[in-house]
Image 1 (tube, one colour):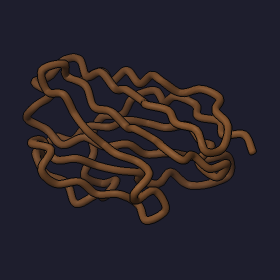
Image 2 (cartoon, one colour; image 1 turned 90 degrees about the vertical axis):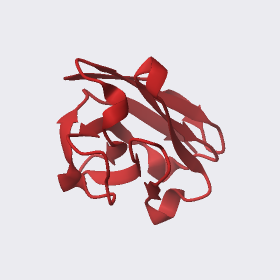
Image 3 (cartoon, helix red, strand yellow; image 1 turned 60 degrees about the horizontal axis):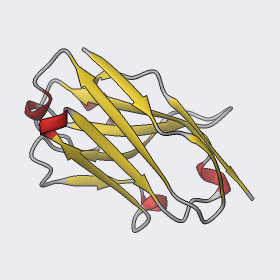
Length: 123
């Protein structure tokens, strides 16, 4: 399984970015997916996750109402729409997929990871 994340970049505070993650090597629609981030000197944290059907999503508290995880199973792609970005959102963002169809938003649910895409939010 290969995950190819893209869409990162430099954005001013208050701006928006949409990250994409293309999954290769599996029937993507059968599995849960998610987005995580890691800032320098900090541990990796879950940003948002989505079940295989898209019916259940989990978000970390600090991004609720601003970030949206979605998926297009026909394109084998999961997205992270990030609005009203804040400087503390600067990090490397990773996409991941699970061997399971459901997730409760825990990092341990995920088995395959992409290479990460850097998001920098300037103040």
